[in-house]
Length: 400
Image (cartoon, rainbow, N blue to C red):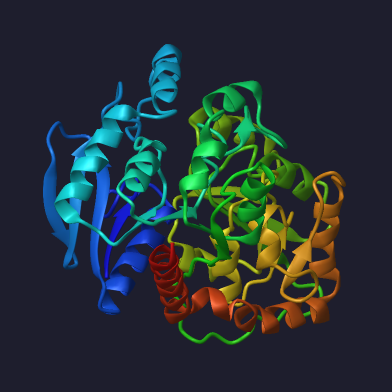
């Protein structure tokens, strides 16, 4: 079976976890005997074809006002014009039509479509080819892909999102199968009226399993070392974390790892008056996790999945989290971590204190952590589940 994968970027152009997961899926499906081809975007003016680990990768120019994956932010008017064209970019539809004619895939698996736009759905459907749409983020609901505005999570679509995504629910009826990387993100789209004709599946992404590690053991009155790892922003709950940490009366330290907007970083550094708060910058996750007792993931928005929490649990590190979005599907309260609630501001600080006050609780959470996320570490499970979705989509087509 020949599968065409469509995504905004592909290795070595990597923006985030979606690209890492896609590469794992593509190479895994190739190992199962499928013929695989990837179509992605690049900043060049002409189409190129190369190979990545034996996978054919077609990279095409983006037909829009500017390349959005650079370091500099475009002016406001340029961004507005870009998003307006990206509602349904006819030029990118023409591009995918040419690729379909050249490659003749049996099925097309769409992932992040920023830049491509849902124009690709029209062309794939018109060619009579089954469409699988994988939901890694909220792009199909929100042009910024993150469902937040100025650091405040959006419970529903704002007016601009409604206008720029007005035809998306209807057009999504052309999709044969939809896969959410968590039940949370899948539910979000279904409740918004998307994918009315599609079969619906949840397939969790995976992370590479670390070497077998012994559980962490805490003794009474030991200093508690807490960590944060990821994008440093308000919507990720970092402000809430710093404020709650500085109210603690226990011996503890907080390491904040990752990068963010420089203005936001400066604001948080100013907020962090305690000498026990340290900004450590970019780190290798596996090395960082060795230096902390617990990871805090205090996201205020609906995380599509929250792989950082899974990675911590895989290393035997208990997680304190808001449980927002997909985070509640890996972190289980009092099994491998503690869940607190942003609407109860002090619940975060109380969770930190519990881990200090009750070493037996901490030790139980750490002992259960790695096994609790075993399905998130199983690459064979991931590939088998995507293989089943592809075969089901083809079977559905043959019966139509």
